[in-house]
Length: 82
Image 1 (cartoon, one colour):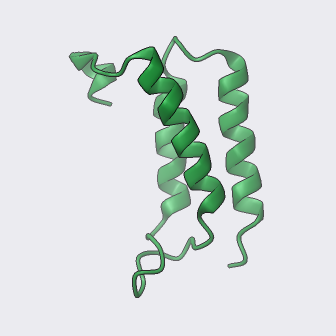
Image 2 (tube, helix red, strand yellow):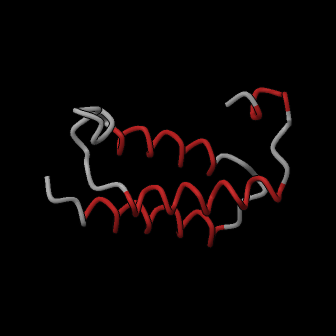
């Protein structure tokens, strides 16, 4: 949000790296309950939607990157056991 608000500190290379890290984080997360006994974070998948929404507002992202983030979110959510 700070970058979108005018601070402009995220470069295209940073953005590409961030997309990869967010996608990997979503796929590795298996707990949607919250931060319980050092096992997970409260409403993590809700926060991922906010983060992906902020990323998708950037004009530098092409449609394929946006679809990749959405598909990754859906796959990660489907693999949850809770």
